[in-house]
Length: 146
Image (spheres, rainbow, N blue to C red):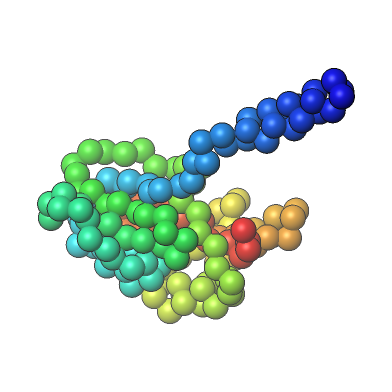
């Protein structure tokens, strides 16, 4: 009986130690120089749905992805250092079609090594590309089905 209770306690502790507060991704905020250009990019290139910004003013625009995670764009003169190691990542069921769409919009993309107009084929079989938005933030799009 004593060992059985210990097993239950260990199982409970292991279960509650992983994300005990059930945290989920809510949103990312990106500071942008030209809000209109950024809204155009995220709406027309990435196809994100613009949503109400909760009354926060005209210098802030919100978007929602299909999984209810939000992206908040805030117009600002703040200078943000950008590099590929710090990026937003999205996935799609059809990366090849998305790459062709970027080509038609004259948006250059590259693989992780910086080779133009191609993708990285990760060891786990996921393909990914990188490109930059209108404020030079790096974006990854891959074909993961997470």
